[in-house]
Image (cartoon, rainbow, N blue to C red; front, side, top):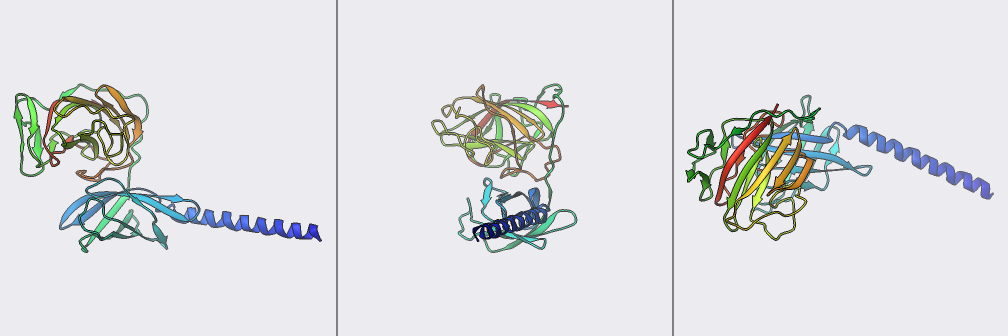
Length: 315
C-alpha cells in the first residue's frame, strides 16, 4: 500500500513539475517581445520628450522594470501587467510636486511599442518606442587627434538651450546662476573627454556624454557614494568611492565612452571602470542612442565653472 502511495506522490510531483516548466516556458516566450530596453519619444504639448524603459522578468510570472522620464533618475517599476500584446504599469511621482501616480498603457506594434501616459497633472500624452541599440564595440580603440572644445576666449563652438547665462571670464566658462544648459556644436560617437570644473557650496551640475548620459557633478564631499552623487552616471552607476573636493576647488573628470561602456576617472582616481550605461538619463537631449551626440553641461542647477575641455575621438 505504501509503495502505491509513494508512486502516486511521485507522479503528482512529476505532473506539477511539467506544468510549472510548461507555464514558465510559455510565460518567457510570451513576454520576450516586451522584455528588454526601449528608447521612447514622448510627445508633450507639441514637443518631443526623451524617455527610456527597461522590462525584465522576475521569477516565473512577474515582469518588473525601470523607467527614465525627461527629468529625474531611473524610476523602479514594481510590476508590469502584460497580456495579449498589451501592457500597463504605474509609477509614483519622483521630483514632481503632485501626488498622482504616472499611468502608462502600451501595445506591441510592427515597429516597436506605442501607447499613452497620464501624467501627474492628469493630462494624457502619447508616446512611441523602438528597441534600444546594443552599441557593441569590437577590437582595441584607435584614438584620433585631441580637439579643444573650449577656446578660453568666447563661446564659439557652443550654444545655449534657451536664454543664455553662460559667459567667459579669465579663460573660465562660467554660469553664475541657474539658467540654460550649454551644448557643443560638434557631435561625437566614442571618445575620451577631459574636463575641469569648480562649483560653489551646495551647487549642482553635470556633463552629458552624447547629450544623453549625465556624469553627475555636485557638492558631495563626505557623503557615501551613490547613483545621485558626484562621479555617478546619474541614476544608474555609482562611483566606487567619493572623490569630491571642497567647494571652490578645481576638480577634473577623464571619461572614456565607447558604445555603452564608460570609464570615469575623478580627480585622478578611477571610480567607474568599463561599466555599461543601460540607457539615457534624465535631462537627455533625445533618446536616439544610436546616433552621435554633443557634449552638454548642465546649467539649470546652480553656479558652475568649467575649463580645459578637451575631447579625443575614438575612430
